[in-house]
Image (cartoon, rainbow, N blue to C red; front, side):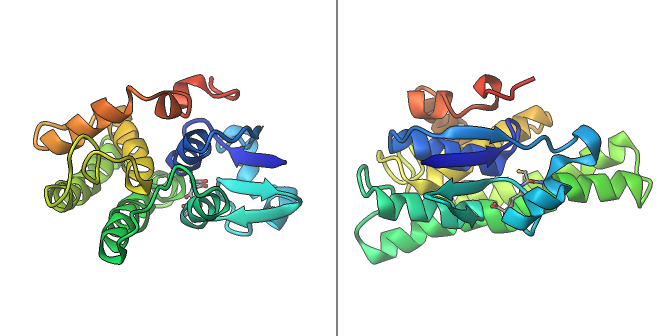
Length: 213
Ligand SMILES: N[C@@H](CCC(=O)N[C@@H](CS)C(=O)NCC(=O)O)C(=O)O
C-alpha cells in the first residue's frame, strides 16, 4: 500500500521514515541510489514519478506524492493519531516554521546537487566543499537554536513529539556526518539525544535501512 522511494542517507527521506514510524505504518522501501550510475534519481522512470529528481517520493494506492513536507502533512492528515501538529493555530504555525527553517533555509544549500556543482563545475576542493557545508549549517543552526529556545522542552515543541522533530533530527544527523561543531547548540543536542531514544527515530536512521551500505 505504501511505498517509499528513499536513499538511506537522505535527510529528506529520513523525515518521512520518522513520520511513517510514529504513525506505525508499514511500508516498502524502494531504494534510489543517489550516487551509483550517476544517480538513479535521474533515471527517466523515476523522473516520471518525481520530476525534481530527488527523494523521497511516496506511493499510496497508486498515487505518487513528492516533497517531504507535503508527504509528512499528508500522512498526518490521513492518520491523525498520534497528532504531529498542535491544535492551536499559532502553535501549529510555529511547528511548521521549524520544519520550513530546516527544509527551506538549511537543506537546499547543502543538498547533494549543490555540493556536486561546487566540486564539479566550480572546481572547489574537498576542504572548500566542507567549509561551505559547515558555514551554512552554522547560519541555519544559530537561527534554529534561537527559534527552539522559545518553546523547546524534551523535544522541539515542549515535551510532545511533532513534525518539527521529524525535520530537525535528520538535519542534525547530517551535520554530525559532516563533523559540524555542535558546541553552541545545547538545545539541539538535547532534543537530538532525547528523540534518538525513541524507536520511531532509531528505526528511521540511515544506519539501519534496507539499502544501508
Ligand atoms: N524539497 C525536497 C528536497 C528533496 C531532496 O533534495 N532530496 C535529496 C536527498 S536529501 C536528493 O534527492 N538529492 C538528489 C540530488 O541532489 O541529486 C523534499 O523535501 O522532498
